[in-house]
Amino acid sequence: MVNKFLTIFKREYLSRVKTKGFVIGTILTPILLIGLSFGPGLLFQLKSEKVRHFAVIDMSQIVYDELVKALDDTTSTGEPMYFLEKIDATEENLVTIKDTLSKLVDSHKLDGYFVIPADVVESNKSEYYAKNTNDFKSNIMYQNIISQIITNYRLKKSNIDPQMIKMLTQRIDLKTFKIEKGGKEQEDRGFSFIITFIMLFFLYMALIMYGVFVMRSVYEEKTSRVVEMIVSSCRPFQLLAGKVLGVGAVGLTQYAIWVSVAALLTLYAGSIVAMFAPAADFPIPTIPISVLVYFIIFFILGYLLYATLYAMVGSMVNSDQDAQQFQFPVMIFIIGAFFLAFYIIRNPDTTLAKIVSQIPLFSPITMFTRISVQSPPFGEILLSIVLLIAAIIFFIWLAAKIFRVGILMYGKRPTLPEIINWLKY
Image (cartoon, rainbow, N blue to C red; front, side, top):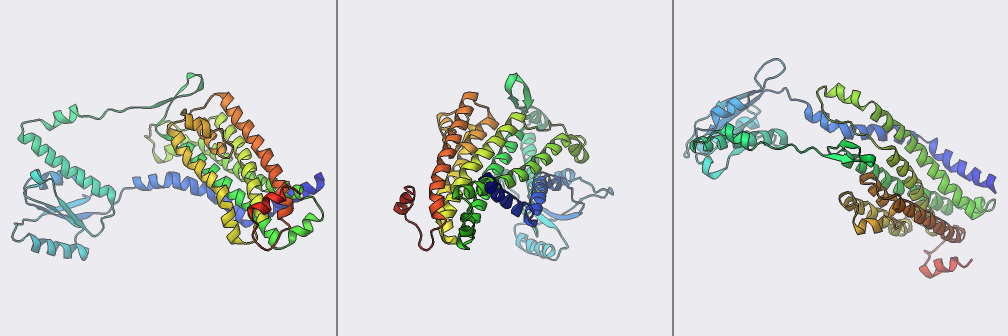
């Protein structure tokens, strides 16, 4: 019996681990994760060396000179990055001048132009025209500069020193510190949320992805009639256990590689950050060992629960359409748990959070969320794990009953009464 189970287990494991898809996916996933984590920030910090030419129609006679002073950036060669030309206009010829400037922008002879109306102090309105208006960083910078120029003008007109106002309205920096077990304090600038979300996302995707792998494996062997030959040499339960644990071992292998990469990145994070931002002053986020241990526990238990359900679905369906419909009730619990996690991140100690973290179909995600945000009492964690194990045992028993009949049933889609009758065999 054990030898047959091991044969199926080995077949399911090696048939996936040896594929190019597994190797490529295992290598590319951490690379993509690193790229998505650090890439946008690094690209955002890159400074454009392009010299820009703007025209300024300043009908208020307030903005132009101050705008020239504010846009004083230079390129790496010391050349001014902004060249601003003042254009005189009146209400009568404004439309004509704007048409002329727009044609210059369209022909790339001008990067853009500003229109400051005469009543800008009262109307709070100004305009910016350019070929590319998707440079949000620059657009916001221009808006802030013009706003500050007008604000300073108003203050001076009211005999109020702008520097005094700036000093009186300085923003207060509020540092946040997370109190961990034992009273240890650790500065947190949102890193704990990011780490929690990443781990939750991996858990969420793993439950769906590896569960679907099991379902498709059962379904494909059933439709190709290969399962008939396999069942003739082993018991249906051995086939079920071999598939569930074989694919689970694939998931553990993949996650072991990713966790190792994450551990190395955490170990050398300081050196990596220093390469790109020598003056950076923020704590390097770390993942507590206890959180990693619970992640592995809930990954294994959650996988066993949902892979069993997916295997049960695979044994009942006869087409891709049936598979899509039958797996939806299973998937809805995973999706629901993922959405509940966002509520739990903000409210880990509410009654709702405590209840859903004890429901086995939700707890692999919801209880882990509570642990990673604010660890609940150990008794609650233990109860959640015990209930989850009990649910796994029940669903394995249920799946074994349905599996041994379903995998040999072909033709029409089974009805609920028929599935209930299978439990009697």
